[in-house]
Amino acid sequence: MIAIFTVGLAPVVALMSFFYLKDEYQEPIPLIIRCFLLGSVLVFPIMFVQHAFVKEGFVLNSFLESFLQIALLEEFLKWFIFMFSMYHHEEFDDHYDGIVYATAISLGFASVENILFLLTNGIEYGFSRAIFPVSSHALFGVIMGYYIGKAKTRESRTKYNLWLAFFIPFLLHGIYNYILQTVTTNWLYYLIPFMIVLWMFGLHRMKVANQPNLN
Image (cartoon, rainbow, N blue to C red; front, side, top):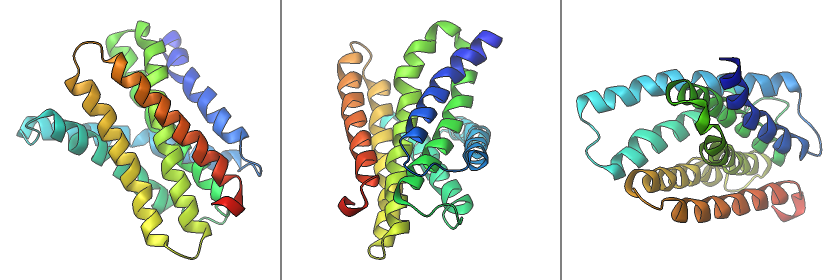
């Protein structure tokens, strides 16, 4: 049990530390923990709703499952939690802050999801889970936080940036899951390029958020 928790949480801690330490003006640790915990408790209502979708037969194909049951539900609730808990907080006063808090929410969600998966399927999946689902959740959080931070720190196009903060992670998450749902053999040929592009996009958003004159 301890080994599963260690393997499940190690990539989460590593990724959160990486994104946190890139912040020029680092945010209070208690707020990071708060966001992380809010993200972690999202797993359970989402699991309930997703189970209900399956039992009621609302999801009829891989496209709807990937984009509606998984991506829409998860990314909207992460976006909503951020807007409800952090958007108007006094500590959220810099573009990059959005990345830190959104990533904490996403990694909170990913940590519980990862541990539950490893408990069910075995610790041998720890490495692949770290490379793909945990990292992808972190990067969806980076992208969400970039656009929320942009909305908070710029006077123009606020609603548009808040919309992008939800829509782009939703779209990318849907594509990620659709690859997993539909490609049964050689899926790494599709998923590895997707993850490379996702990392490049996320790292570029981080760089821009840390350079106010360019955002």
